[in-house]
Length: 153
Image 1 (cartoon, rainbow, N blue to C red):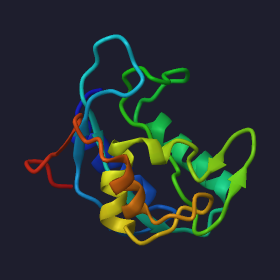
Image 2: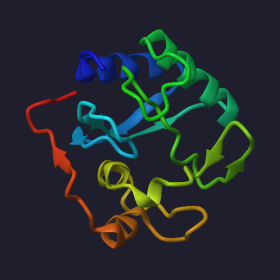
Image 3: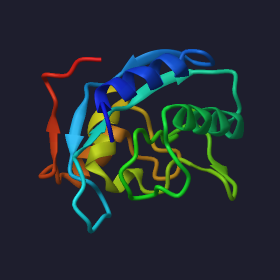
Image 4: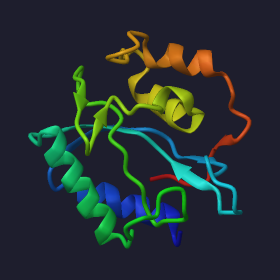
C-alpha cells in the first residue's frame, strides 16, 4: 500500500540500524499471491545482511520496522505497506512457533526466488540441499513476475 518503493527505501534505512546490508537485489513486481480479492501488484526484493541479532531477535526487529512503516496486525494476504520475511539465516535451520527458517514456502514462489537468486544464487537451501539458482530453475513459472527497471533503490 502507499508509496511502495519509498516504503522499501525506508525499511532498508531502518534495517541498517542493526544490520549491515551486503547485497540488495533489483526490484521486481508481481501479482498478489494467495489472494482472491483484487489488490495492487506487490514490489519484491531480496537482501543479504549481517547482524549480531539471533533469529528471534531479528524477527522482533523486522516486525518493529513493519509497525513503524504502518503495518497493522492481521494483514496476512491483505494489502499492507511493507512485509519483511526472513528467508535464510546463514546455513542454519530454526523452527519455533514464531519463526521457521528457511522460510517454508520460499522454494514455491518465483517472486522470492528471482530476486534471491540475484544475490545468493549459489547458496544452498539448508533443508532441500539445492542451491537457490537451481530452485529458481526448477520452479520455472515467472508469468506473474516482472523486473521493475524504472525503480532503483
